[in-house]
Length: 380
Ligand SMILES: Cc1cc2nc3c(=O)[nH]c(=O)nc-3n(C[C@H](O)[C@H](O)[C@H](O)COP(=O)(O)OP(=O)(O)OC[C@H]3O[C@@H](n4cnc5c(N)ncnc54)[C@H](O)[C@@H]3O)c2cc1C
Picture 1 (cartoon, protein in one colour):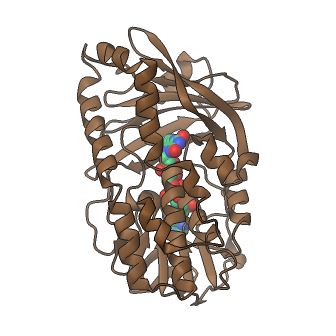
Picture 2 (cartoon, helix red, strand yellow):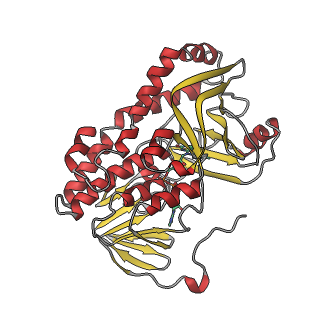
Picture 3 (cartoon, rainbow, N blue to C red):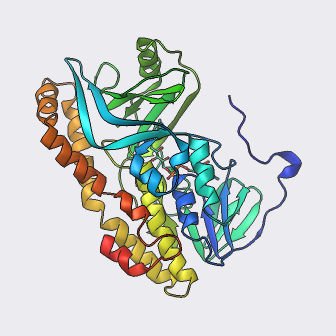
C-alpha cells in the first residue's frame, strides 16, 4: 500500500475557523472552483484528506484543448489523434476530430492549484451541520460551501442511495506498469467485461491499463489482471474508484456540489475530468459574483442549478446509450453497429457533439478575473 502524503500525528493540529468560501476536495472540480476565485480578496480555504495531487484515481486522459486552454499543457505526457477500438471480431482505428492527451495527475493538480490564491489544509471531511463542516481536525464554517469530494457526496445530508452496489455507479480499476505505446486503445470485448469497456492509455513511460464496468456488481480486478497479462505487462500500482454515472442534485440545502459528487462524469465514456473542470469553473464564476457583490448565495444556487440542469438532456442521452451498450455488447449486433459508427462522417459528427457538451473554450470565456454571471446563462 502506498503511503499518501498528508499531515500526520503532531502535525495534525486543530483546525477551526470562518471563511468566505470553503472548498472540500482538491482534485479537478475543487481546484477549478478555486482558480476562478483568484484575486477576489476573499478568505478561501480548500481542504482535502491528502496533499494536492497525491492520489490519482483516473487514467488521466482529457481533450488536449481543455488542458492547454487552462494553461495545464506542462502536465501533458502524450497526445493522440486516433482511437483504436478492439472488438472480438476486428480492430478499428478512428481518426478523431480533436486530440486527447494523457497527463501527469500530480503536475496537473499542482499547476491548477498554483492558479488560485486559496489556502490549503489537509483534513478529512466527516460531514456537516448547516454551514459548519466537520473535519477530523475541527469545525470549519463558511456561507459558501462546495462539495467537490467525489462520488461519496460526503456533504449531502439528504440524498440516500449513493452507496454501491445499489447506487447509480460504475466501477473502474487500472494498473500502471512501466511501458510505452503509441495508441489510445479501447476494448469493447465481453471477454473482459460484460457491460463496460477496457483500455490501455500510454502516458510517456507508463501504461494505464484498466477495466470499467457500468454494473457495480461486476468485479473488475480479475479482468484487469488478465488484460495486463494479455498485453504482457505486470499488474502493478493499482488504483480504482467508483464513478457516478447519473447526474445528482447540483445544490442541496444551500451547499454546492461539483464533479463526481454531482454526478458530472459523462455516462457511456466515463469521462469525468473535463466535466469536473467545466462545472467547477461554472460554479467558481457564480461564487466570484457573490464575493464581488454582484450576486448573492440564493441567486448563485439557482443559477448554478439551472446551468447544470441545462446539460441534463445530453447526460440522459448518454445514459440511454450506456444502457443500450450494456445490453448489446455481448450480442452479434455490436459488430455491424460499430462498423456504421466507424464512418469518418459519423465520427466527426458524434465526437463533435460530444465535445460540445463541455466545450474547451469555456475555460477561456470570461477568464478568472472577469467572471460575469450573464455569459454563464448564455452558455447553458
Ligand atoms: C479507473 C478510472 C479511470 C478513469 N479515467 C478517466 C480518464 O482517463 N479521463 C476522464 O476524463 N475521466 C476518467 N475517470 C473519471 C474521473 O476520474 C472522475 O470523474 C474525476 O476524477 C472526478 O473529479 P472530481 O474532482 O469530481 O473528484 P475526484 O477526482 O474523485 O476528487 C475528489 C477529491 O476529494 C478528496 N476526498 C474524498 N473524500 C474526502 C474526505 N472525506 N475528506 C477530505 N477529502 C476527501 C479526494 O482525496 C480527492 O482529492 C476515471 C475513473 C476511474 C475510476
